[in-house]
Image (cartoon, rainbow, N blue to C red; front, side):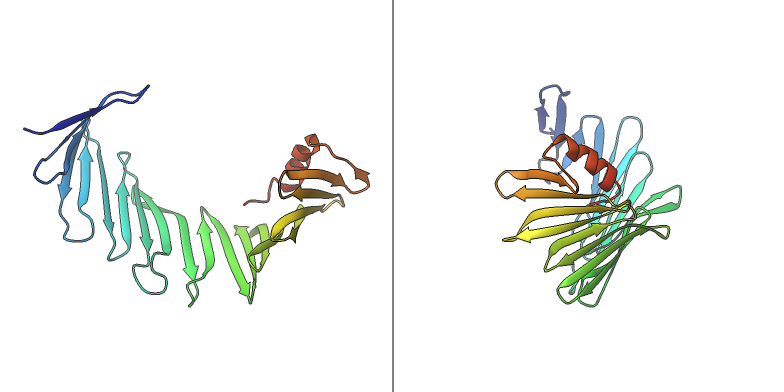
Length: 227
């Protein structure tokens, strides 16, 4: 006889689980029936089928650095990483496959020290340039500049795109001011306090202290500067 456990959370349908008492492996979860095949590697191959004949599967091969997930809609997601060495655990790529068509959502290149030098994220190219304790990160999409970030001693010191540039000042390791300069000549200063956060907002030539202006300025000057 298969043991069964029923779980019901507030607002959710009751779920019934059964499992093999000898192997302790799951057999069913409501309409999903499980088939677990030992692989002789890090993890077993797990496939499940529902009452409509739809299938899902999961397999993770730690030794080769590859994880494959197949959804009921036919989309297969393949994640690969370096399994050993200096770059062990660092992701190489994440690719989705549907109807034999591959779509790259993430791909990375690394230098000899294991530092990422280039990333592809959903069609956008991000390049990392490091020099001593400084780092420059540039993001482009189809040859068009999205943004540039500059770091010094692990502190973000500036972000810029074609519309604006934000400069960051630090005090005791924390951001004290953010100066935003736009292409049309406008300039704004955000002043920060370590305890209360944003204290004041000064617009060059027209000093203000209005929190309502924050939304306007962020919308008009930084909406295209991505994190």
